[in-house]
Image 1 (tube, rainbow, N blue to C red):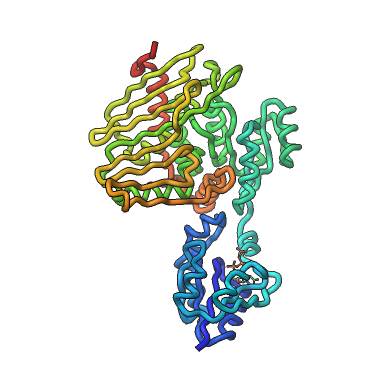
Image 2: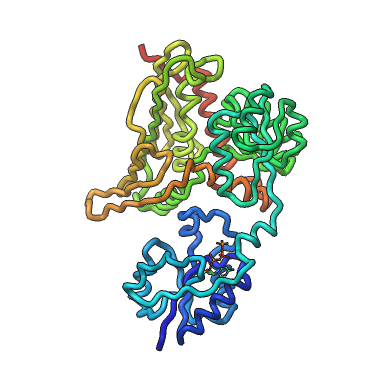
Length: 448
Ligand code: CTP
């Protein structure tokens, strides 16, 4: 019996897939089809797949050509499968010509003719009209947003707004964004959604204006610096049936999501303590150190650490206190303690003090260590008393990592979901509330 194997995503199953499967089946007596898992696709940067793995498996099954369907979940699995199933022929479309020569060592490799003029990518493009995004603010992160948005299908950055037209012009030339505006109303009229990357203190006003104009909003961290403001804006978004999402990029990354489900499923027992640190030394005449522009370690750096604590321990904290070192009216160092009835947590932040930027989650059975820079999570370890049980997890953090939040924002808009479990509105409100408590100052001791 000749056994054949082939692999693919098979999203929005089309004639090209059916021809390929028929040809593969004709090469032998028994055809195994490997369908990629959702997380495998996400991990290799394929973020726009429409059908989930169950739907894609069903679609392949319905063609009637597969004798057996398996899930492809990791790099290198093809070699394992070929040996495990005793495969004679590995078949794949001719668009992959030359890419699988390394499998010749294990079986025969056949490149089958690809059907011209059709692909899942083409079908995905046909079935959506792009979400037209406008950017408010033209700083460094705005430029990165543009390059990252190219990895997400169904979105296009079409306009940019800056109250100084000259700056909007420079940005629009540099990043080939057509629309450039210094008038916010004309700008908002032209877009479906906005990404706000302006200075912190302008966020509240821009978010409100955009929502009142009926536009979805993705806003950079920290979204706002007060819990009541955050609540008001989310309520407005809900009333108008619009998406408002805080762009806390780590919250949307595949590695962070996996870490969270592992912890929630009890691999380290009950979580008793979370320690998150983040420091970035800056000096001179910069926004981060300017009290008038809400500079300081807490406003600049606390969003990711607080996100991790709120995601892991929840929103019902019992006690808050802070210690800060203040220079020229801004906290160049802050250590915050957020205690719960059943757990403790702390954040260590520095703009003028350097520290190890890692995350440690301690539990009754073991702990998770995410080494610095933990907010770009691409590797973490689950460690136990018995070191033989330790597990290491590796992930690809693609590019600047903004593509994951853009993908979530776009899919919320398309599916009409106004809250994301990856960072819910109430979690975002809680984070703003903790920053607000810090700014009020009653819970802060100043270091001499
Ligand atoms: N295939 C084909 N003819 C097409 C499209 C795909 O023969 N017109 C083959 C591929 O070469 C591969 C298999 O179908 O062997 C599964 O490919 P997959 O990547 O799932 O399909 P695409 O339509 O190419 O998807 P995408 O556009 O997302 O890359």
